[in-house]
Image 1 (cartoon, one colour):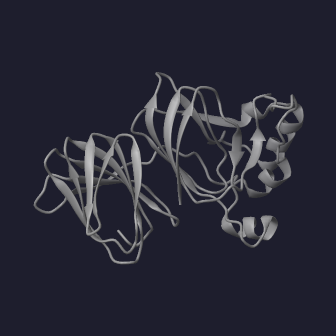
Image 2 (cartoon, one colour; image 1 turned 90 degrees about the vertical axis):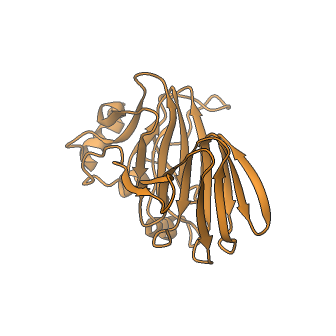
Length: 250
């Protein structure tokens, strides 16, 4: 997995990623597709993202729009605000627009097919390459209208006021939002099934394990190895964090 912080002050390119099978067949045996998720850390009032295509868009109508220079007519824009989570599965057309700060969690892959680049040019003064044929092959035109993920609460951890809720779940990874009140802690145990990635968004936390202790303050991410064993994330002040792990290991 790969974690990025994306601070967009202008629209990023409109793109789509293939699934693993397409990437291996067309890009090489070692290549992966990409499923990712976005957690919005901050957004200006009225901020939007591109999240899928307008209803009724088909391969043929999108190809016609590309040729006519009307791709933007096919893009579905949805509002985005702090705390929203968006699952971007392989085959989903997407773009971060301006005025938004996002934590992106994704498969570790660079396989990206650019659909539209807002008329920009690269450092050489020429438009950047588009990948229309590949994009048309991998876009899921039957996906329907997508919406922000509805958090699924897990209540509080036994004997504590620590709250957990799932904000994204797929076959590739699970992301939880964890709130740890000041003076309390989240206890876990990594027994080799999965590593965990913890990202402190607000507050200050101490990550404690048999190997010692490391402080994490917002916004910072840390990797907890799969062989770490017992650990505790303790809050020096109230902490809001993202917890990432592989499916069926939480």
